[in-house]
Image (cartoon, rainbow, N blue to C red):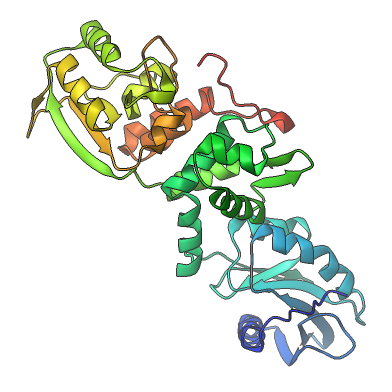
Length: 369
């Protein structure tokens, strides 16, 4: 049976019925005869009966309060089976308050129509084809998505993306990410619900690292911290030598590191910019001040240092050359992506050169780092 003991609340089913009725009534050739909630003898939530050119058609609709891919996938095959119980066989339709692009693609893959209460829709039967995309997310969905990329959650994601083919036990992942077991469990649930990760016998493993990184790219916000501008007379090789002398050679305990374009210069060179970028804590800031002979600059600055509020980024630093401590490829990519048009181009280059996953092995190309 498609239905469970935990029924979708009546209000949601009523709203779903109103939404499917309003959508169908916009098509001139369709006459809506009846919209029936929880039809007797059938394991679907809504049955829509309509006529087209005198021919009777049925739509069998399942309503779920959650539209994450994992929950959608679990219902689609059963919905298709339930739809053939009718005479004539019904067209299956999945309805939820909101369906992400990934969930919409999943419905198409299963050849099941869909509708959400935001306005996204895709229905295809007989000569009717309805497709509508709404570029908006409900506030609750936006909050949920942002929570996946909050600083503590991001520490977990960076660990996973650094070894995307590895399966992690919760305790091991919590230790590597320096967060609590409960926080890892919350992140794990979000990743599995969105089908970005899967739970195997060995532990949690990313299944869609590219999807995860792309969504993070779209939702990314720069790390919180105080952004300070300076001027130095050093440049070129002399700057590199002085900067590397200020950076701890042990990435695990670094408190200052190249960031943004400056990190990309060491990870995947795309073109050098005039301004140098760093992340630091208070001690790292002083190290950089002394080594680079920095003076405050209200204009004409050529060094920007962000003193981070959260220090989790330092745990993920990499060292592509001796003492050239940099933000990780993932963090560098995200920072470049919000650094204007030139940054977007540099981000694309870095992702192509370093952040690649090959086939089912999902191996990050970090052999040179």
